[in-house]
Length: 275
Image 1 (cartoon, rainbow, N blue to C red):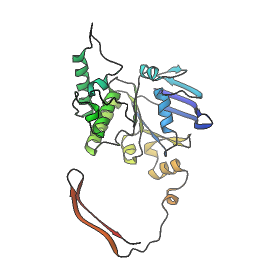
Image 2: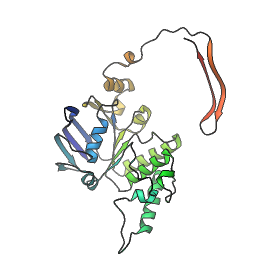
Image 3: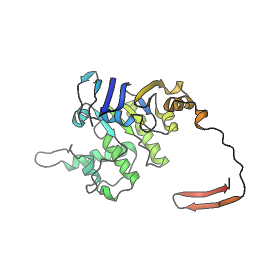
Image 4: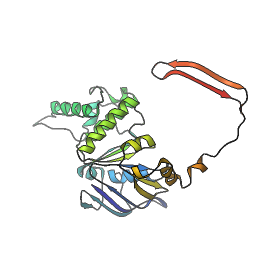
C-alpha cells in the first residue's frame, strides 16, 4: 500500500528524519514506536501531506508520488486521525465530518445523504454522538470519537491513527479495536502510533521503531519482547532504565481508605511512608 525509501526531512539545520525506510501492507496494522522527538509525528505528517520530504521517494498503491499535499494524500486514499483535533468548534458534528467534502444535490447540499453516511460511520465504530451537537459542547472523548469517524468517512485505503485511545475509556477503546479489526479484514492498511505497549501487542502485525529521527528496525510483533522493543526505543537495556534504589520506609505520612468518586474512583486506598 505504501513504500517510503530513504526519507529525510530537514527543518533548517535540524534533521527530523534521516534516511527512513517504511512499508505498509494491505490488511495490516503497522505500529510506530519511539520516544517523544523520535520522528513519529514527522513521518505521519509527511504521509498525510502536511509538508514535503527533503530527500527520498514515496510510492502509494504502486504509484510513485513526487510530492504530497493534504488534498493529494486524501485523493490517494490516505486518511489521518491526529492527536491534535482539527475540528471547528462552532460547527456541528455532522458539518465537521463533511467539511470540504460535502455531498451535493442538484442545487443544494444533500443533507439526507450526509446524515445517513454519518450515522453509518458512527455505527461502524460503535460510538454515539449527537450529530447536531456543536463541537464546543462535547467532551474531549467525544471529540476524539468525531475525529475517528471523520477519518473513516472517506473509505480510505490507508488509515493513520495517532494515539487514538488517549482520551477514550476502556469500553470506548474496545469498540475502536473492533472497528480496526473490521478495517483490516477489508484490506485497509493502518499505521498505528501509541505508547501503550498492551495496545501495540494486541493490534499490531509489525512494528517499526524510530530513535533520533532514524529507523532502528522493523520487526514482527510476535518475534519481539517488550524489553527488546523498549531497548530499541531508548538505546540501552531496560535494567539500566529502572535501577534498584535503596530506601528505608519509615512512618506513615499519608493514608486513604476506600475513597470513591462517582465515575472516576472506586474504593481506592493508598499508604505513603516517609523515605
